[in-house]
Image (cartoon, rainbow, N blue to C red; front, side, top):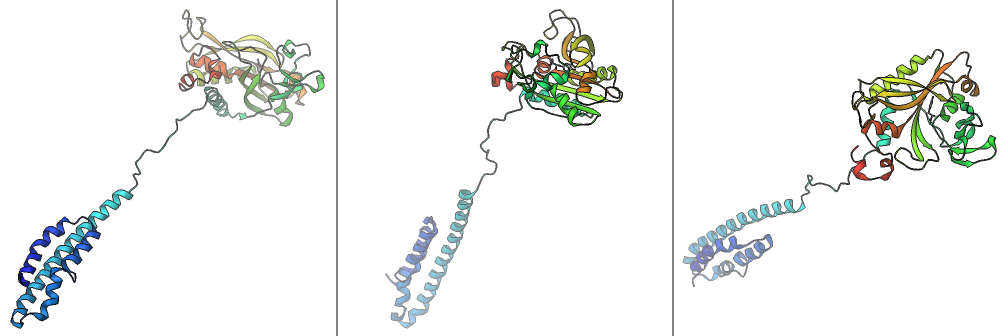
Length: 348
Ligand code: DAH
């Protein structure tokens, strides 16, 4: 085959060969087999010297044509392959930032804590401070400072869990109410006093629908120079309306607590039946729901902590947190709070 035919053939076969190459590495190999020293084109180039001089310009021109055509094919295919390569790398190395990350189921605060937070917030809104005290408490703060006589039945071991019992001056117990923080706070702080005390309390009760041996209370105490019974009622009415709804009313029934005189129990109007619906699930038909104990701080308590009862008066109240939550949500057994059943917990 003469040189011209060899070059024509190289030119005509190149497009298919170039198009068939699928990678940059293969393209480099193809380039040397099309244009390299040992390629047909390379052989024609090497043989130029041996051609008859009159043939040289024609073969030279064809040689250039072959080189340029093939080079152009290779260049454009190289650009294509480089684009593809980059596209593939981008795809392979890309991170999908929209991909969902591993998530854990979201928990929530226990209803008891939610109830404490909400109730405490209402009093904080009135200017009260939040106080706390120890759960393992001296009998002095739990009973004596609160005007509770030595003979009071709540001191019995059948009611109170003692950690250290026997010597009346040094008895340690699990506090049966949050009221001891009244005495602790007044001992350490000058009046005026406006505090709420959320916390855990203990009694030797067996678990049933309305009792737990470990439960929660919120204590309230206000002591100032001119506090009257009306302030107590107004404060608790405000609390009831904030917590149970603006239609709420309250009533007070005489009661007895050692640390308040007079003492009362506070009922809130039933928010479920609007009063007196027979068999109402919340009030049972009476129209009233028993809520908490309260009263005017007994002068003996003020004296026990070194306050002057001639100058100061005050009111106090103590409310059960479980009770608040049960009334508000129509929960019929206190056991739900400790069962840790997510079907219950996730409703709040
Ligand atoms: N400590 C009482 C109890 O656990 C509740 C109580 C009643 C607290 C009257 C008070 C109060 O501060 O004034 O039953």
